Image (cartoon, rainbow, N blue to C red; front, side, top):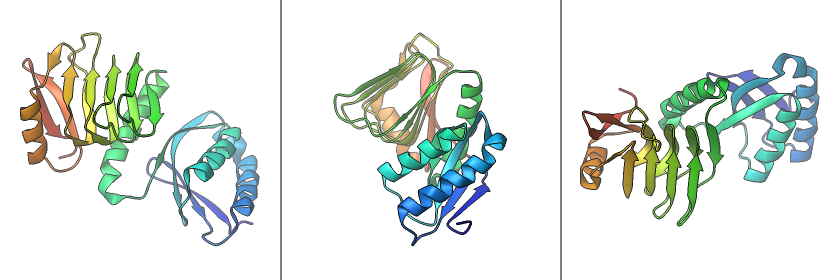
Length: 213
């Protein structure tokens, strides 16, 4: 059973390596034993989790997250092993762990489709895309671990210090506080920047910068 599941610490939480050939039910039984034995070490912990060794579907991931939660661990997000997104995930997890420690902010897992509206009284991290026709409004920051094509408004209560982050940024509308970005300017700046981008207010205008130098 020990060989079916291996739990190791990663840069941002824990990596769970799963046997690629064993039946999923056997893996679940092994996970229950592993986390039951280690529950006192993880009690009230908040961390990101990654899976390796085999590809899981969403239902299987959720079953494992429930097992981990029963051990007293609050899983704030699931990280994949995509090197292209590695720095973005690092930034998201570090920032969000800090926010959650202060009991601020929330997570939304999934892609926002056309006509969907997501609102938050604090900051929000979206683990998915914001598609054209959807809208996100937050009084704090907006972090999108995916592509932004819809409309977003960070600092909706008038906070110009808020920011917006996305892996890819080509929004229909982008606002921070009481300032709205010129769509064509944002689009052109986005084309000039590789990798994750951050939108901030500077001198009464919204600009894009690389998230990581």
